[in-house]
Image (tube, rainbow, N blue to C red; front, side):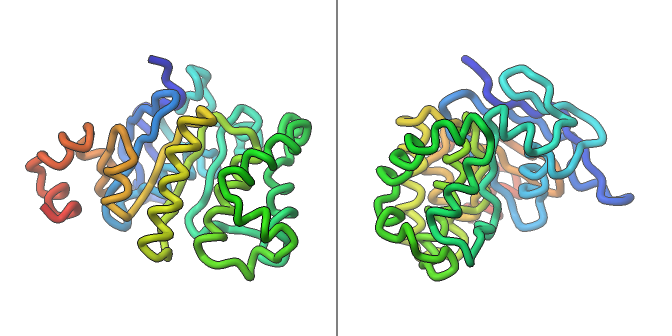
Length: 239
């Protein structure tokens, strides 16, 4: 089994406050792995640290066995890592097409832009219909589709996906979740998913990590996680 992404004993401080306490996880190639946990558990901070927005004080981050712990985000994008942040962070005054073009800013991605556009329009046909519409005027579901599509324009091997269902109606959230399966299976992209919607996370992920107060408190398959007797798991999953 090839490991696309591996974090080992990641520790991070904001000033004197430790926010990541020895986090270790693995993302096998061609899989969806979820990170669950209550608000303030450190999930988004973990994704930012993997992406290089924050730098760990201890531990290692490896992409396909290459240590990238200290590399900045733009270098990691060139190596095949990208992130869809919480809240989507689109350019609201740019059109759908212009937002997609912004995702293909590396030379490797620019060379494949035409092919990438065809791929994202097959995944999200509505974006082709909205091509010249400003991103800020799209519905919440369409904006989330655009955020994911923009990430795909960089030709990634790994996507860090932070709260994709946030603010979406249940039907729309499930529709977006279904595309994750297509992205993983058809494009071979590995996905590390942070998600508050427990049903979506457990339905899509092959493996689950549960975080609390900056540390992994348990991990396992869907069935293993649901059967755990740990208090935080029971409280968070409503067991």
